Length: 94
Image (cartoon, rainbow, N blue to C red; front, side):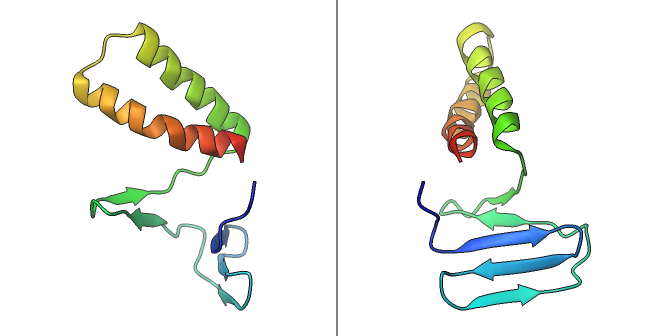
């Protein structure tokens, strides 16, 4: 899979945030291990980052698929699970 044009990499051990653009890079040091990462999308809703490995994403994806197929949930919950499913697939597939 091709890497996105901009990659943000946070090293918890050193508290360093690196922004890699494929050209110039920026590093911000000494942020500390408790830095919070958020993202705002087109809907202007702030989302918190959830850092998972591909194997963890695979387990979560299986749980979401199971719930969507077998468990009676509210329509709002179904919509939220269907929205997160492709993001988990992307995380699983790297």
